[in-house]
Image 1 (tube, helix red, strand yellow):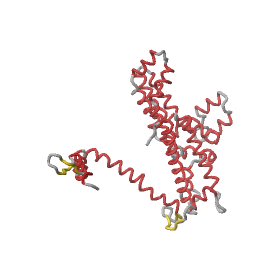
Image 2 (cartoon, rainbow, N blue to C red; image 1 turned 45 degrees about the vertical axis):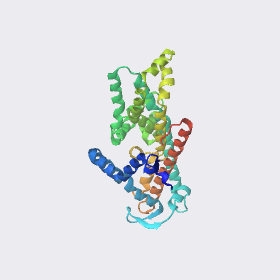
Image 3 (cartoon, helix red, strand yellow; image 1 turned 180 degrees about the vertical axis):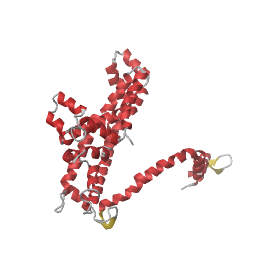
Image 4 (cartoon, rainbow, N blue to C red; image 1 turned 120 degrees about the vertical axis):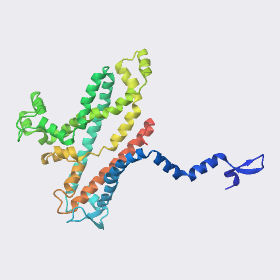
Length: 357
């Protein structure tokens, strides 16, 4: 390093002096943490509001990561919440993927993995475009009162608890049991000839072939309105001059949607698509476990419910191996989800120059 790298030559005095810009940078670096402390003290109310969120992430996101070691350890057969210190490597993964001579768990895992992928894929195929269409319809409603009423009506299902939502679904399609009478949807399907009377009597949720359709339709009903908020916010941010220019060129409503609205919100669509692909295999157990039954395991069992059944609370609790299998299944699910995010982000960045990171 030479003197000229951090000093400048003063022609008047004939000596080297410190660069003023470098002096400012040195002062900032020297008092960096002091400036950070001053900022925290000045905005202490904002940082105080961060404490609950930090605690939630610590207790519900970071501390549970310790249990990820269970994928590589042998669980204690007596204490269900204790892991032995003996590492077994990838034995649990090997049992799930390839099976073993002493366990038939592999076919059930692959069935759950297939169901998880299919439910997520159908949700992406039919559920992702629906909020965009809903947002486009909201944008075409000229009456603010009518739009507000419709928005509240479509947002409302999102704020219902999962138990209430699944109870409504069961009431709409159930038949027989303690609650006599056929559900409204079952009656309608029987009236139009989509199902016969025996199917309606047996109950749609008791038959595997109807579970995926019920799950997807109820999911769209629940989340389409709420998910349209992001797209509607992007639509209303479009400059009115773009619509005026399109109208001067003779573009109608459909042409404006195609050539003005959709290109303007393309970046938002890509970002939301990437995040949706990232959760492609992340189906929560709450709704599924409230809707499925042993008769519908073949189409309703997903990885999260598989992990619950074999994770120390189901039929393999006494053997102690169930918890290791459940942890390994969840780990595989999360790793595949991470790879999907990276792949979707890379493709989007190369194809449209829009990416999440």
